[in-house]
Amino acid sequence: MATKDALARYVFASVLVVLLATSCATMEVVGDDDTVTDAGWATDTGTGTSGADGDADSDADSDADGDTDGDGDADAGSDADANGDSDSDSDSDSDSDSDSDADSDSDTDTDTSTADCATVIAGMASDFEDMSGDWTHGILDGHTSGWPSWTYDHWERGNATSGPGSCHGGTGCWATNLDDNYIQCQRAWLKSTNLDLSTCVDTDVSITFWHWFDFWTGTYGSQPWYDGGFVELSGDGGSSWLAATGAGYNGTTTINPNMEGGYVCYNPTSFYVDDKPGYVGSSGGWLQVTIPVPQALRTSTFALRFVYSTGVSYATTNQNTSMQHAAPGWYIDDMAVVSP
Image 1 (cartoon, rainbow, N blue to C red):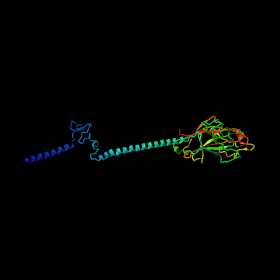
Image 2: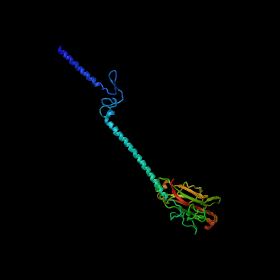
Image 3: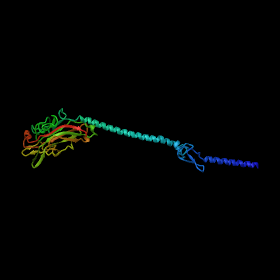
Image 4: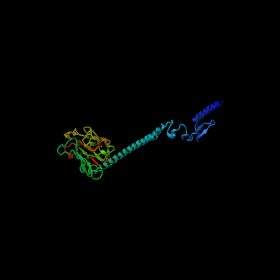
């Protein structure tokens, strides 16, 4: 009997131990921020870290050690977040900085280029007071001579006493004839020296100059005729020419090649200036012209030239007599290269 009682007590004790062990394994230690319910279970208040692992709640283990499933794997992810994401953000910031630096460099290059262009063109202004051979002139249409003693190119530089009566500024300017009317049947060009505009390839630049003109206009054979001229630009030193646009032309040149009785200009059908937009009639005073230089022509060998032609305005074979029936012509002064 005693043996049976001892055995029963042993079995009861064993069962009690098992039950206690199971109960302890399933219970959570109550922390400072947990509340004990009437049933005796702890509930999380969510106000702080009071669990056994220092976490505020059971699903935020990764807050303490980056571990979301208790196996420590999330530590690597946390490291990736701490290092990888941060590095990524840092790289992004670095890339942004690089882009910013690139933009800054680009802006600096642009500013430098603009400054270089401004410095270069500042030295290209000319008031024609002292040329020293910078500008040249010659006969158009490939002619070298015509009738004996006949002048086809009468461009000259100095003080104007005819036409406007004086230069625009100072005592130096270019004119088709400084002290008289031009001669009929003329065909000539006036060309600048080559100007290096290569530093202005990305900067808008224009040519400006002052001019005064008064060209003969008349009617012969029931047709109106207009002596005149225009401006051309070149990017290859004068090997080829492009008619300037935006120059404020006021008409179209139509050169009268002849009059009855043998009064015919040399090669009357080959006037380069004929039937093209240009300056005709009278300007009515000194005018300033601004001509944009196309980007394609902003080279190291940019040049400009003024071209004009005159037809038969009076039936004579004497050039001096012809001047009495022509007009003062074209006067040019104070040329510059500018940037808006």
